[in-house]
Image 1 (cartoon, rainbow, N blue to C red):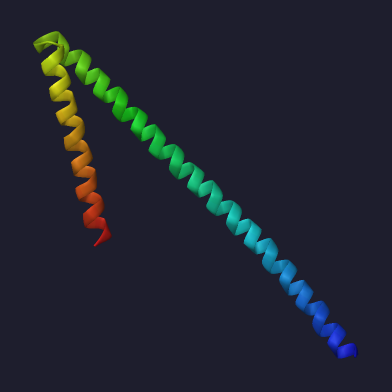
Image 2: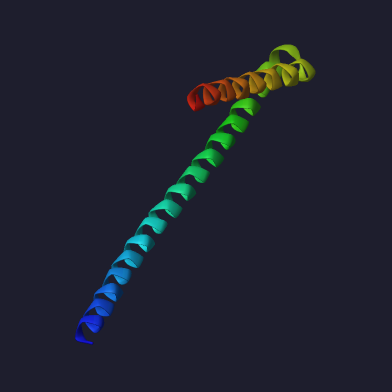
Amino acid sequence: MEQITAYFLSLLEIIEKELKLFRLLAAKTFVGLCLFAMGVFLIGAGFILLAWSCFTAISMLIGPALAGLSTSALILLGGGAMLWIARNNLK
């Protein structure tokens, strides 16, 4: 009976240590995902500001309609380049 009790207590200690480790790793993973999401958001905001700056600069030279077209073309080229790089990284 004492052996069963000792085995059960050691099993509970192992489970407790594993749960502490799981909580630590889950917290690290959650923080990493939050930081990744914030980075994606900031990069998106940076691209929007870059597009607005390009639009403002180009609209002074060639007018708002052509500036909008050229700025959207630049954004589409940037997005296409990112998709191409992502596709090559997944291979």
